[in-house]
Length: 128
Image 1 (cartoon, rainbow, N blue to C red):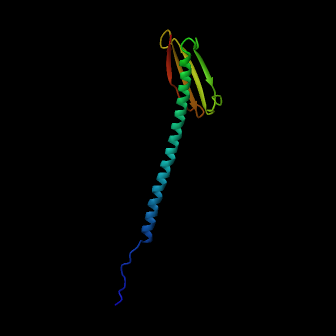
Image 2: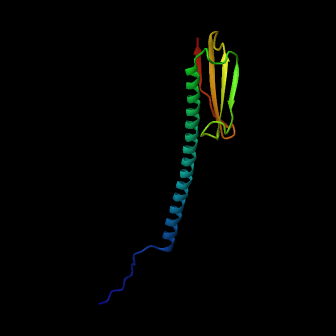
Image 3: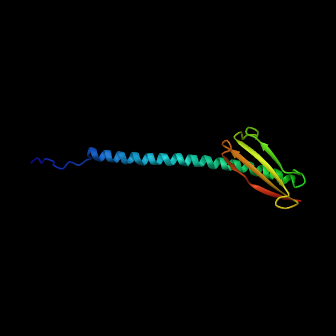
């Protein structure tokens, strides 16, 4: 009356190896994606900080008005480690007098980071 089991259920060693290999490939792909996301977020943070520094300087220049800014073409550089709380950024303000026409000044504020390899450069025009 005893029956011998001829069909034992379970996983073979080969099936387990295939499953573990697929899992490892998927996890490695996710690790690469995570690293790329972290790099992207870091770059976005630096662009945002540089844009904020440029905007801050543009507001200072705009507040001074046309008459209180440079009367000739000038460049003012705030080097690395000179902007309070932002040692990894350099800010260059360029005044282009009579541009785009007489009685106007174009102000360009360029903010550099990462050893001058990246920058943002917004502009504004002041009039009399």
